[in-house]
Image (tube, rainbow, N blue to C red; front, side, top):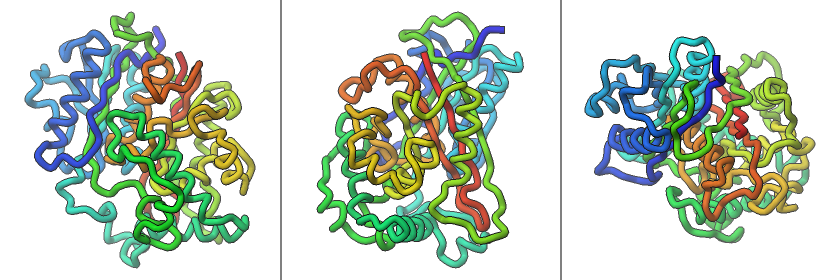
Length: 378
């Protein structure tokens, strides 16, 4: 059986589009991915849709007007890991020989939700008491800064870097550079996190990928999947270290083992920078540096474009935006374009190995509910 390959990619603009629907955004990304792969809808045997907040049967709603032939549609909700989990399941179906060509897409439309933090399950103990994501990450940031004697400026510098990267990404929502001072003086959300240290709460967007075991007819050289890992959070019954991203560390170990590579082999990373502190914690969880060394790695320029291991060349969630169902697929689109040397002004020179990491869900008693990590190569 041939190895599954990513043969085509597509992505919509990310931004606030109250006059559009998530279905329209998804259709644009799907058409672009099919064109990139040199395929039609009739060539696709199954569709995998990642969606977190769109309600009932999002995949069928997106596809019903596109002239599909009744192919299987699988809807996956795994919070912010929805799109990446859909990709993982699609990959397994190809490897099992169930299908030979599938399409994965992720989408969400947050304009209709009224803004603010993402709505969470009110039956959850944490959420009922106000432990929504900004509050949780503010606590993690406070603890990290305290334990390692680090200035809040290190958090601001994550936003400065990713906004600078986002300036080079035509689909990014926030296309404006900011200074450290602007980040720190922006409206406080949850001490020490200010507004510009948080990914935007109202972003709409979609992304799509074509996976196939057939010979490629696509525009660009197809991309291989060296590792695909999805893990769930462990229920914590004892005191835990809030500055340790356990689920990401565990998933990364599995992914490196699966791919036969290490952190030092990576050319670039797209990770889940929902808040500035997230990026620093994930540097350490992914093995880029030792515990407490993330601010020094950032300050060295190693994780900026032109550095040793660029992180979030797309601008990340902070600059590009974060429609949850689309994010995991959008990260993979970025990795593919980088590996294929199609990333334009944000191109990482000689990119040959990329990793994406996305976490999902906040529930009482676990670090995160889900984490997906993928490693791609030409």
